[in-house]
Length: 242
Image (cartoon, rainbow, N blue to C red):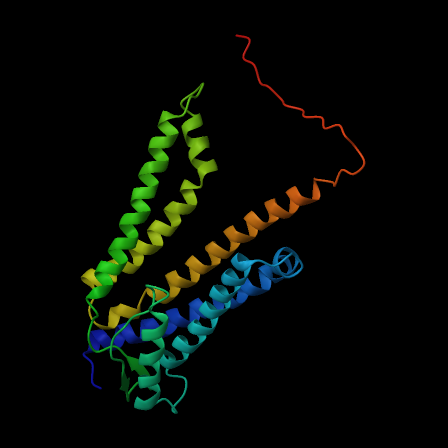
């Protein structure tokens, strides 16, 4: 497969960014593995943690495979592997819009699989998700503005508590996927999805670990009451005497 010079430059950039994405995910694994064991593996199992782990480890395995076929580090890559890559991304694309569904072809110069045609459906997929994030963000802002408050500064505090800054990061990552799909060429299709997909996974898993930490801490604070017929309820009331 022959590509113009600009596409070859984008392919080289994609190779480096795919290596960065894999490095980020593996390094993150080392940073949070101890907490993962403590908050997930040693806790009672349910459907949610199983799904979270399947998504997280499936995401990392997918990144390793995608990075391999676009890296050019092996001369064993051929059209047959690119076809396997097609089937893989077509299957995993059902689970993540960060994957692409197109016909990858082998590039003899860089020993890598490339996408000769930009999949236009990505614009709709990315734009739809971005619109959803913006819609949720608007709802959070409206909710914070309508909430009773003593000072206007509490609006920022309420937004922070509701997680609007985390949502803002997800919005920026989605926008970084959408821009190359709209304005980029064929080779730019894979330029940002891998790195943003890695950051998206890191942020999502850390957020889940934070929620699990709150759940585990709350469980430790409660003790089973046996042999008692009395229950005492304490409520703290804040009063403004001004």
